[in-house]
Image (tube, rainbow over all chains, first blue to last red; front, side, top):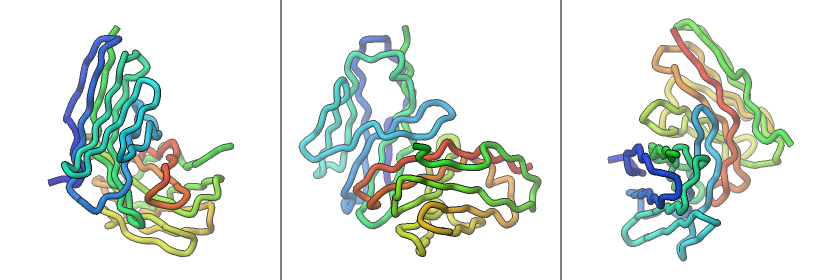
Length: 109
Length: 113
């Protein structure tokens, strides 16, 4: 089993839709959590960190459930520019980052 | 502010050739990383350097060596390239390691024939 797993995708949604991505991690020692965004043939870039209490940044909301070892990302009012691959990332302090395989999103006009 | 830079952007090697991928960051970060990204596999860590003077193996270190030349620079060397090393290679850096955002370079697209 992979240490970080994500919805396989792809997700094809119309503009304005709400879409949710799920991520699970297997190592209970994981301490920090992130969502990255990767555009086609580009480098990953941080979308948002994920905090225990949940956090929101504009149209994006991230949730963490440590008991279930589950992370989610909700995108409201999807834009064409949201089309990308979304990477779930976990880290155990002092050790390396582990990336999920990514979920591809296509927002359609 | 350049962030993380990588050279070259593209490279084609023949099996058995060697090459070094260069990475530099200008953000005064302590930690640096090398990843490879293959279709359907996500990013996998090859080596990382938690601070100047230290390097550690990641998930897929075989066939690679690294050098943390100074705080700014972290190079990845393929001694004898194999077709299985065809991939996109990303260098990244972060400030304090696990709690901090990673910043990535633009990647090197390597093909080994």
